[in-house]
Image (cartoon, rainbow, N blue to C red; front, side):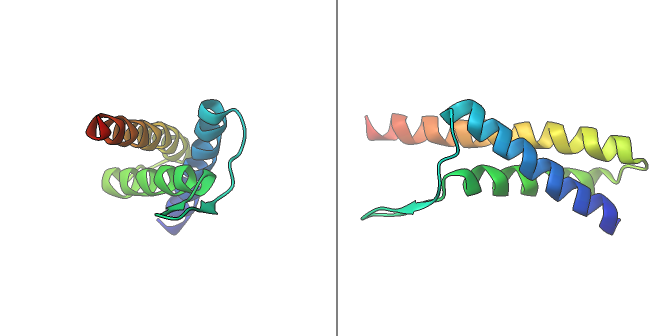
Amino acid sequence: MFLNITFALLIGGLVGVVGHIRKEGKMVKPRRTKKFIYLGVLEEVIMGALAAVFLVVSSDPDSTIRVVLLSVIAGFGGDALLTCLEFLKIRHKE
């Protein structure tokens, strides 16, 4: 089980990095503004990794291939969640 969680963390984080580069075109490093801290690429990595771990732990896959596939799917799901939250934030400003 520990090996599955480790694979999920790594693969979900990697999918988060790929999603960030696809969306931004480059890796944006974390920075601090006057009102908040922008996590940049770390935001995508954390969300992808957490989504992958939650999905792998809840589904309890029996093979490494299933862990990899579930982690990739969950990593993209974390990216979709961040996109939805950004959309709601823009909509709330208007």
